[in-house]
Image: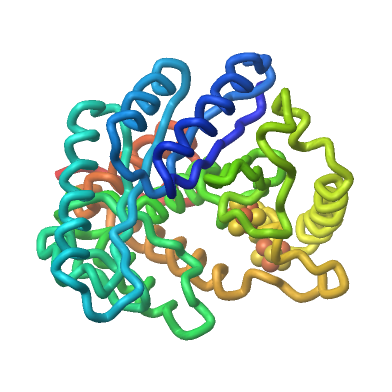
Amino acid sequence: MSKQLSLFFVVEDSAITCKRLSAMLEICCEADHNAFHIEFALKDIGVNNLFIEKVIEVKKYFNITADYTLACRFEQLSELHLRSLAKKRFNIKLLLDDAAQLQTFSKIAKQVARFFPKAEVFVNKQPVSIPNLTCDIDIPLRFDCKNGVDDILKNLFNDWLFSKQAVEIKNFTDMLKLILMKERNGCEYNSCLGHVLSVDSSGMVYWCKHNRPETVLGHIDDCKTLSDFFNSGQFENYLDIHYQKREYCNSNCNRYEICQGGCPLNCDLSQKEKCSEENFIAVIDHITNELRRGIGLGDLSLFNKHARTIILNAIAYAPFSEFFSNCNLEVK
Ligand code: SF4
Ligand code: SF4
């Protein structure tokens, strides 16, 4: 079976990223495709013509997802800044129309959201208003959970699950697929080690998609094959530590199927009796309970269309799952 490998590119400077993208494309085209199933993900795509051409070229060989962020660090935005954000959003929409097979998930910081009334999106502890959502979004589910965001996330999930809006909230759909079908997508509940490479615009390659400094694997110019990236002692050390943690979790925790020991960066073997994912787990439990409650009502038309599709797939995939026993499900 081939190994899933997600390649992330931070697109800070489109021209430089083009060069890195070309280098990675070359390495990937040389790779043994029976050994790797490769997907490209472009983080925060900007727009220039050269870059768009490169994206369309890569698209010939591999699946691509792209996200963009309309964010700003300042409370007060200048007119100029606002105009450039609006242009960026407009251009990205053009790109997406031209290459409809691209998927996109937007994140918009709260300072900016109020200037885009048709795309209000949650960020920084502010709840999203589901009826106002007009574009698909991606929400980090662990976002500041320690500071009490759990309730915001829980309410948001409930609103979304039963809303008539056709928007996708990617982390929620990922979570439903995980809970109902054990299908893993997101990094927050996955063993990502060896399945992720991320390239920043300076060409440094990391094994975490968030480019954490402790996860550097080397420079793209120094590697000729995909395996070269993972052949470092430091990476093997992480692998070993996380493996031990997972063994512990597998024997001791009934959420292992979902959490798989959590993020490798949270792994502290000296504390392995203590769960490193408590806050995230609160969100998982809530989603599981709401899903069970909703399915128990027996009417699939109560769910939004994305959730409904996943539930229908899950019924086909695992009709005897505990979720569907005692339910007489129908779409009214
Ligand atoms: S190391 Fe953690 S944060 Fe980074 S990609 Fe893996 S799961 Fe995600
Ligand atoms: S919930 Fe905690 S103890 Fe359970 S598998 Fe995840 S990290 Fe391990």
